[in-house]
Image (cartoon, rainbow, N blue to C red; front, side):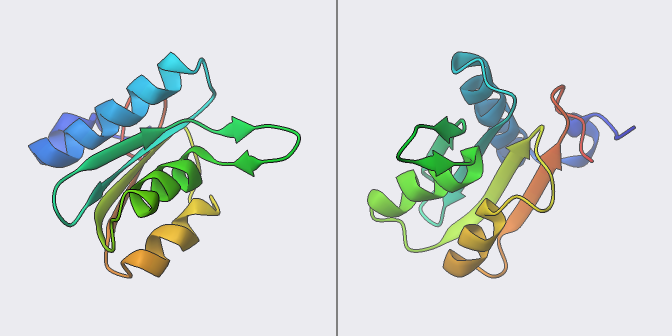
Length: 110
């Protein structure tokens, strides 16, 4: 099992994980995500599952950032997701060097 996030993440990245966990809880979803743009603004989301629209939480968070004018991301947090989440491609499109943190539901870094 992973180590507690506080043992491995700085304060800003730990906050990003907490925002992702809050989005997951608010939506009663199986996963959640958050991103931080180059200006320090944060965007959190849970998966969207509509007949006409399917987004992972990370895709939704990146979409929220991009639609708010973000042109670069510093970091992304994905809670209860996996390293093959299609949102990672969207993060990399905006910022190839952005830090991507993947944790379990409790916030333990995987």
